[in-house]
Length: 261
Image 1: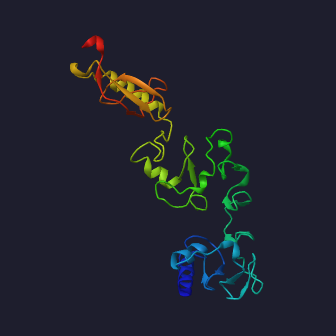
Image 2: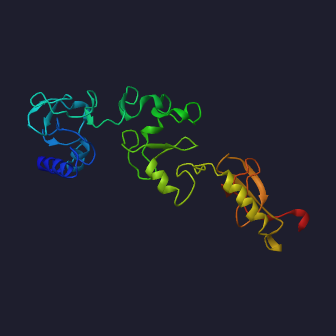
Image 3: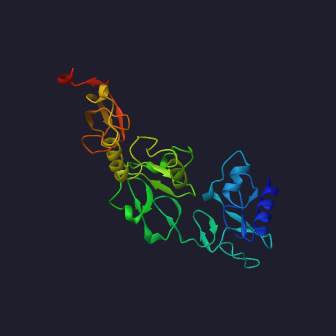
């Protein structure tokens, strides 16, 4: 398996960078679990049947002089810079991306640090513009992404916070919007739909129902405010009487108004 680490490095150098597809670095990690050399923990985990604990890494190998040495930022033999950024706790080597180590998260994040804050309840670093303006869910980042079912907390992909407080990978969120607009966990609208609801108001007004349906009402449950309403049935959508959202579901059978029977 060690050969795959050399192949990763060779491919990276051929593409004008050091390291592997995941990180730009001038060293290989010596995995404490199997003593094999890999460009990074992700390369290791993709090739082995076990995971590399980044916090237990003690030694690295320089890609230039090949000397195995203690984990540090610069080669003690040939002075090769292993990474513009180096974290002695995570043993993360990479080019400078304004990274910082978050003590509460326990891992490194891409910054700059001043643009983020750590929400103690969500247990995750979020952009500063969400401070005091997001719905907290305790330890939400410790759940897997409901789209791809992969880890969010340690993922290299940025997390997107939905209005309901649930998290998705940003890439998964963008793909989800191609198919729908609801949170896959709670069905709350995943973005501000106000403009679309007003357009739907116009479409409903311009599309009268056949006479046999014009006085038909139905009980609905709103996915956005969780309120219950009794509204006029319409094939294009049924608007919540409380928050005016069309993100609703029928909760009872259709019926004709008593005074119209």
